[in-house]
Image 1 (cartoon, rainbow, N blue to C red):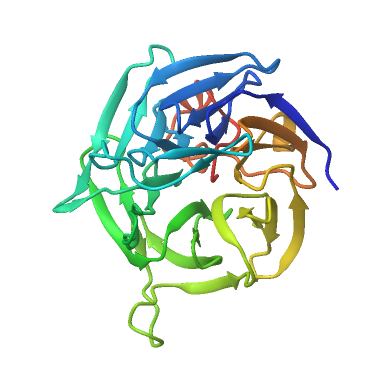
Image 2: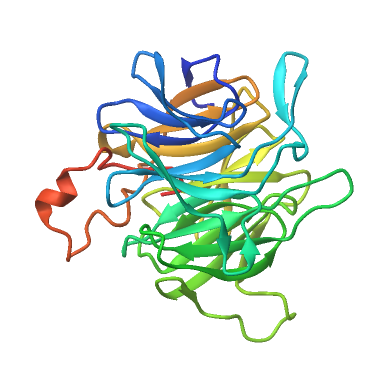
Length: 328
């Protein structure tokens, strides 16, 4: 069993960890509606009040932190733990926003894709071109649940497109080391899908099979697995949060489950890599309100846009986080 060190506690359902160069970690607090910075010694400070339900986060090529905001949840206290529930009465939709880490200034980029409103944006990953893929899990009410989708967008607010639809609760999203494969976890089915990328915001459609298939099933975990966010390690393995198993399940690019790492919270929801050599995993223990660190067996991947050939070296070095991010 891996040794788990608690860095910070008292967080209000943290998710979306992003490791920064100075050793601090950004998290969103879904219940609190904030983007929060956790110092290496565990002190917390609010970077921005976002409202709604900030979910996934990642550093973009312009140095801003991009956030998927799901619009919020009703939260419940059960045996001292915080658990998310249904859509709140004041829900007005979901959106994608960007936060200046120096000033806390926020800009809402997208609330819809053409005539499709964003319902529950959940997680995002930047590609080598500087655009980003993101999941929209949708929202759940007492008797209805949305069908989800995967979108692709630009950081300047000029383009958004729906690429994959429908999916059953798409949540975690990540890219293979060569940027040619997109991975998406489905919350409700316990499945991870892979999609062949043919260009920015483009995938190769599956030929044959049933009409709704768009990619290849990497793995169906079976049993009782509700999947959350993911990060990809340097060997291309998918490290996905596995609820209510309460840990991180590691899946090879061929679909083999190679490791399962239990953690002390059934709602261990997100993982990212940071620290020297990207050998530290930061995991959100959400229902207990904690951020933890783990010395991971393998290193994570750096941000995909860092080594773009058209990006000046000085510009590549002048960013808040030249290491890794959530869902990297």
